[in-house]
Length: 101
Image (spheres, rainbow, N blue to C red):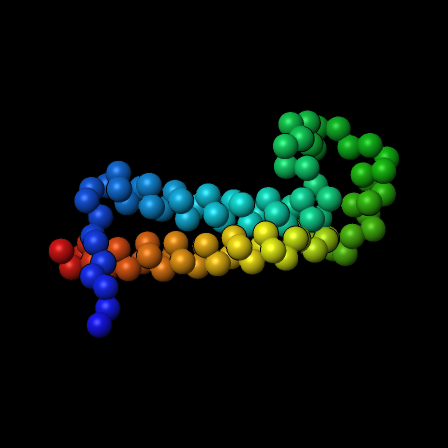
């Protein structure tokens, strides 16, 4: 027997649920970016490219970039991926319940 899924009360309830999924996706992207050696908090990133950065970029394979270089912390990545899967599934279930209500 499955647990009944509560439909969204209103648009704001849906928006909050969707934004929580987006937050987890952004968290995963930040874990990957930091593992690749990029500092997402660097406000000046890209405004000035020094010689070391040019050399590093030229050594990359064509098409490689922010998401390709490093290995994220496996625990942090696994935790975020699990939370994202759960949140995405709940969001989809509530969307279906809302359409049926």
